[in-house]
Length: 201
Image (cartoon, rainbow, N blue to C red; front, side):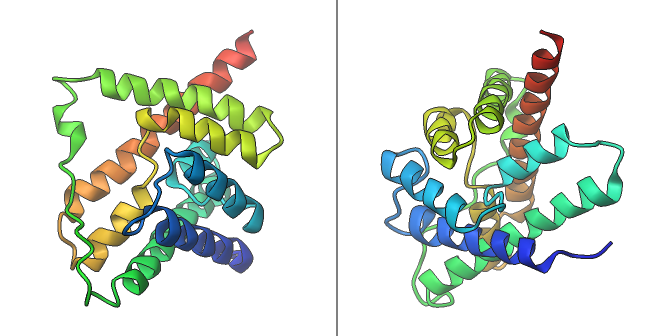
């Protein structure tokens, strides 16, 4: 498999911009109006880049699931590039650890799913709705505003969290990695369900 360097650089650059400007210390976050505007600009600037792990997971799970090289490997590399982009932004923002970022790992939420499965169901539903917005509207603006509205039901900072964990010498890496995968997987499953419902109608 040949690695598309332009795609990887776009993912790295887009994730860097999101982590540094939107999710870093004093950032606006992605669930705000400013965050939606900035995300749309990042998507336009780094055209073709997914930038966020949830977008990559949706592409993975709605693509050709049997294509291990073209779908799984290519999108897997995008996820890695996003983490490295976020890591570089965090290292820059903290002056390579000289400034405390105030980051601490969140607990692995999947272990509490038996007690509160509504969170997972909400994430799947948000993925189904948002993917319809993302794929039907030929506009980064609509997609970014859709994420802003549905962001409370999805974790949009997966690459940033992974980068922060790596920058913190792997603190909480198991919980962070599990959240990174499960958050994206549930949104991607929602996207797949949305596509299947759309095909059935």
